[in-house]
Length: 253
Image (cartoon, rainbow, N blue to C red; front, side, top):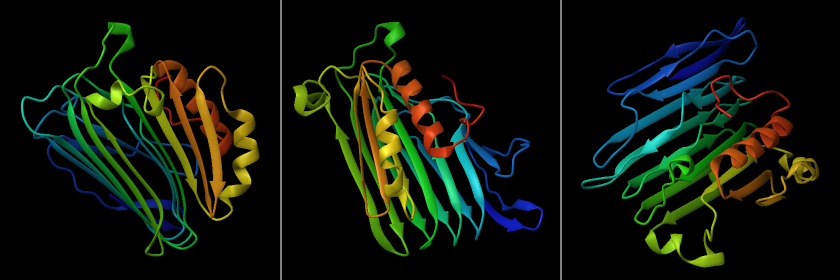
């Protein structure tokens, strides 16, 4: 999907959809369009591949999210693959705010996000992973998640975050996840992002692991909680402070 700026606001100029990967542009009353990606298959399992791409032209401001949580189901063979490609032109700004990814026992998922930013572009990204459904009493014993997030500004890498979860990670104690079963990263990557640090730290929640740091055009928050609901509530509060506006309407809190 590609959006470009016109006198009347952002306009859709290119859209390609195939398989279960879809994108919608709900009617909005605000200035920034809200792109909603969805997987009509209801989840991912071994052998599935899902690709999302969003290209913002110069000066475009947009929000992108997912219709609901993504689910990685048990695999009978091979990994599911999820790829996200984001491109932001000069002066563009994107809030990439997908809902959580829920991992089921015996799931195999390889996920990759690549973002290319112009020198003065602004990107706010949030990613949340939940290990099983607490309401169903699920406990995970066997998962394989490979996650990679990479952001480049003017062709130079400015943010790189690899993650690998295996059965050993689930039982590795304080050095890994310990008793926490939901975790998230929020990263603001923009000129002057360091100025948000004091405000973000005042908003950090109690009752879970939470920390924030800022350097060189980045402000990064990391959260870990025993369950998804308190984590999502904390994310909603932090994102509201950073964005100065409510979450996308499709978000479920």
